[in-house]
Length: 263
Image (cartoon, rainbow, N blue to C red; front, side):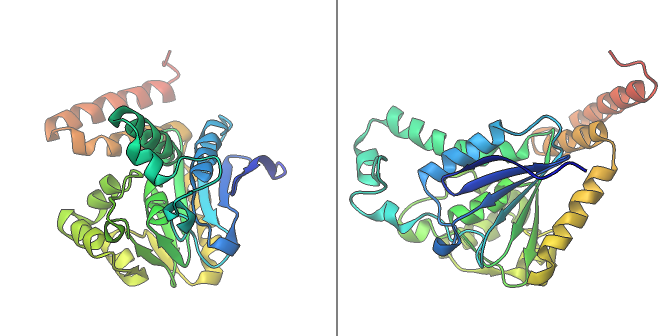
């Protein structure tokens, strides 16, 4: 086994790699891993920095909370040092505002790449941007003290960091609307029952459960996992017949590869 190598460590984000598993850690526990534009850019950079050998990415937060959401400094008139405030953004053109939000979203989009499987290890608060970051991952293992909440609507905003699509996919439109519009907390039992959480464990077993899941994911051949993930991701955009066709094409590729006949 190779040593744990640090690939990136900046703006509240640390990326380490050990063999086929990468770990992205939010490293500001004193502020409950509150998020900022600098952190979002660091998350995007972490995605670009992944070695090609990585198959599983674990996302975790140091301390008692996974992430309490957007840093409250964002709501002050001055905002973050060196960043446009929300008021400044609102004064920009539609194109400028769209471009800035698109840049923020980049830290949340790469987690569903078909060549990796991503796992969020979530404890304590996962609020707003923290909830959306957990939703960006393929799988979620949560501690019994987890508290999910989507508070953007309560602040007069909307969830805009790619969280709405996976939330509706997991819990359905009606429950997603209710969670977002009320801003209420979703605790561990409901998270597991509704599909937000793949597994709920005691807090002191969270890291071990994630390691076990990563090992199970690595046991299958990489190309088979990649093809399977791509098939499942495409279900919502394909008809039943189109999905059958996609399954046949994927299986043909796998059979030819196993037979040594692939290009």
